[in-house]
Amino acid sequence: MSERVLIVDGHSIIFAWPELLALHQRKTATARDSLVKTLTEYQDTTGTHVVVVFDGKGTMVNQIDEPGGIQIFYSNTGRTADEIVERLVAKYAKAFSITVATADLLEQQTVTSFGAQPIGSEGLRRMIQDAQNELAAELKRRRRNNR
Image (cartoon, rainbow, N blue to C red; front, side, top):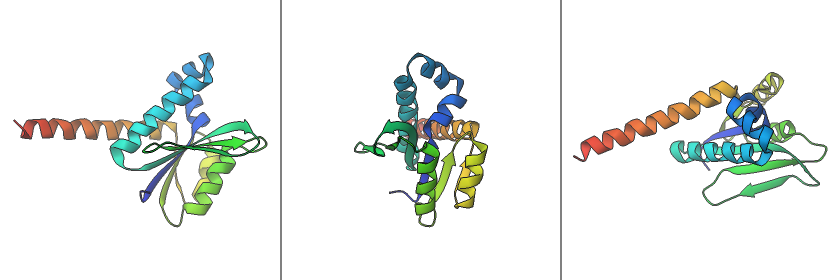
């Protein structure tokens, strides 16, 4: 696991990003899949370990791990994604540098008290765009050097 961890409150970001909200209004799973794809690319580009947490409905907290992929948690009935995020931060903030992406200002304050660095939805968008720009610039440099 990387020393840097990004924990994303999935539905908070979906509702804050207009393009994901539009997908969500048509089909919730499509919006989740799009966010997961974007976050997987971010993890691949930066080496930052990414965890996304969604509100769920089952009787247990579900975790989905795919080799090389990001970690995905679904909260169980009676629990919110915020509670899962807070538990993760409380448990791992001393061992890892954790950033939490959420549009929820109260959640941002809470994770700060547990030792994480909060960012809003637009901060997450900028982080992802910066990583994409850095990758594109690095690829351009390498192509130029291989000529």
